[in-house]
Image 1 (tube, rainbow, N blue to C red):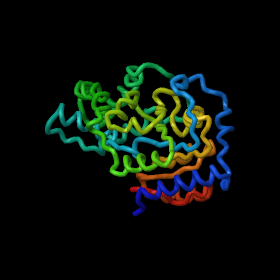
Image 2: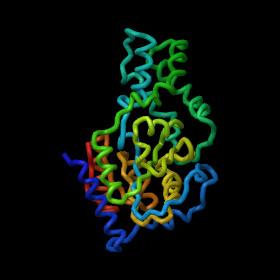
Image 3: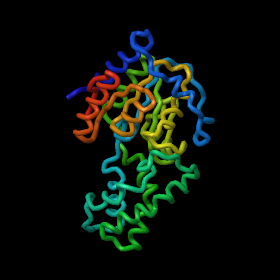
Image 4: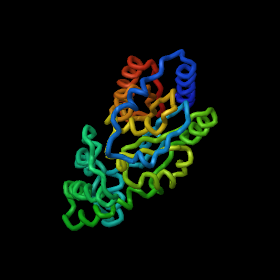
Length: 281
């Protein structure tokens, strides 16, 4: 099994080659020159005088929630209907569609956090109903999802996350997090005691752009105009790997959930950027 040292070694190599000119830098200027979206949170992002930047995915890369969305639904049901017979697998099918990140090719309307969650209420209710719950019970449980899912007590930080962030920080790297997440993401990052590591947190719920949409990555790049060595680190072959490469960024894939993801990414990254097979699991 590859250890977290692979990320450290690869990040160092990427930086050394880009900063010294031994390896051509990615065309970050071209990415930044794209028209700035009228949708987003760029006013909240101040330019940073940095040369080495790592852009991190969050869920499945730095931290995780056991059972994800269906796990949260089941936790609520355990509380509301003790002795029920619903299994996790019965709740998952309805959640394969309906989230904004299931339609990443379009810009999504910005609004309040309340509006963001209200958009998902029919989805949560449907998951319960399709699993066999009555309409009233499904509605009651669905209304509790916001509080349940965003409670940091139900999230865990991977054991190697903090040591790797600390080590890379001491070596001069600046960190940004780019995530498709809930409006309360910043509060969650603070609750997990990770916020101090990141200069910028860019969240799709605040920008309207879900990875792998190119604009999601450009928001981060425009916040760091002096960066010359930039690398994306994430677990998703689609959102993180393909998305970053779509704007010319090298990628390190870690913790791919599916074996096929890891195999595909090994070939994909190696062919496009020479990053090799950098995986954690």
